[in-house]
Length: 53
Image 1 (cartoon, rainbow, N blue to C red):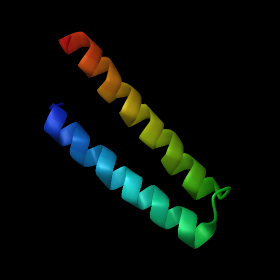
Image 2: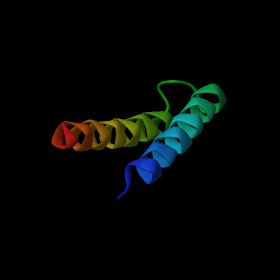
Image 3: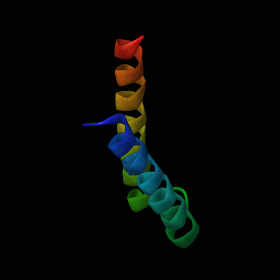
Image 4: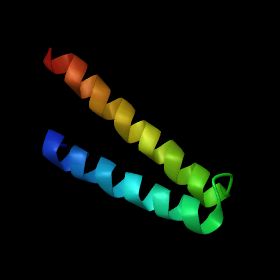
């Protein structure tokens, strides 16, 4: 996965999570699932960045 694709996925998930939070509430299972997925993407980005350093 390229860094650019990963950044696009992160931004897409961030938007989906914010929309879900507004629509269903912050403690909704949908919002929480999206938040956890976003965390995984952010961790992957951080790990890739650390490997590049």
